Length: 147
Image (cartoon, rainbow, N blue to C red):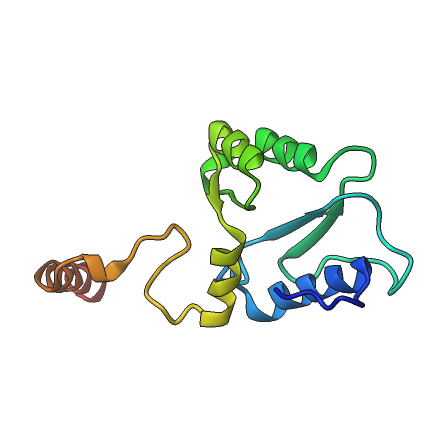
């Protein structure tokens, strides 16, 4: 997301939250997003609150990196967690803990595509499955669910 030179950190934070809330690059509303910012909430535009499916956390007395690692470390279903970052150290740390990683650009582009592409959040492209195998799967699912 491009940053305006005159835009303060608080405005940038609100713009990111607004983008994620409106564009839902994380897919379904059932998929929860937690944004971890370094520091404390700014004084500019007021307080930060949770929106439907988007929680905002400030690291306050620790780095956002350490907070993210701690969140992943204490999570029950680490395999269901996707950490969005381009920071190499965080990428390695959370992968070692069992979480998956997406790059920032990849995640933000998901919001621009509106999830109409056939690529899910794991990066699997359904077009890689041959047509005859897709047809077989469809037939089997119809038999199971519709009969």
